Image 1 (cartoon, one colour):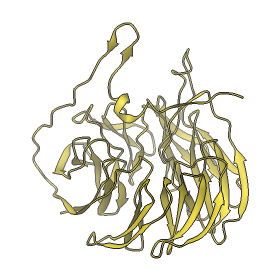
Image 2 (cartoon, helix red, strand yellow; image 1 turned 30 degrees about the vertical axis):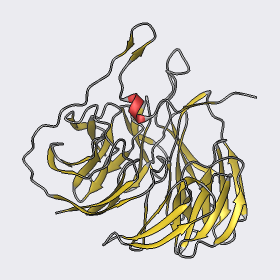
Image 3 (cartoon, rainbow, N blue to C red; image 1 turned 180 degrees about the horizontal axis):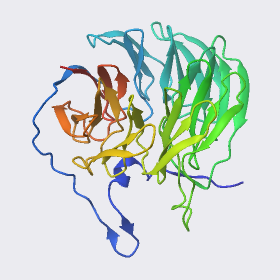
Length: 379
């Protein structure tokens, strides 16, 4: 049996630690000191909530005026998005392995005993459960009446949202080495699920059948060693305006035509932290913490911001017309989408790495891996 090595060492904190040499040791890059800014846009912390420290995949989900969260101990909370007040707090008698997906009052989540659970988020009643072939470490995706999950054995499976019956299952082949993937799937309505894959590929999957609509090569593995050839799409692709964009670790950022899958452009940049888009640009946080903007149509580099290098910077998210990132010292930064300059800042109190913020128009959800959840608004 082919051995698969999961490179948990290649998490964001280590990737920022610098270049390592077997003979010379490693170079530790110091975080860039924060320079004073002239605030042009206020960024307010509307509310915060302290929870148990979640794994990287436990992203909060906004659903019908509520924020739904989960943690590894089996606690599922619904929080009023406006006030931050806890509306319901359910403690399951089993550990959880993934974040949640939400459909009405039903929460879909993976358990630590390798099952997919459908839970009533108010009562905590388990409506149905289905065994999985292995652990599922990323949140499921809901596409219409189908729940799509990916398990650690690289299997994609579709289940009926109504009763949990399996509809289809597809196995993918993994390279020898991969970067730990905490979430690189995103549903697009009822029509498709975008799936970031190891080996630098993005797959567009039909959620009704599991068939691949098209595949796109974000990046191609290269190098003399298996480690150098690790090129994985480990963050969620984005879909907007008939375009699919994704980024690969040790690879490129690339955009494709959503219908045909034809490559529109690609540019060299390494990221496991994610992309964001607006009407003009694609935004990427590189592994060193620099933030890049590329023109959506041509791929031309519009700007680059190096002010936050080596600060353990999150992936970008849009908040209004600004680009939001959060660093490892708990500072949230607003960047101009036109120039890349920092135009607003606020300390939100997180410690250490922060997941890619969840964009909610003129607001955004930020969850640190220390368990602090914050709702940010433009002032």
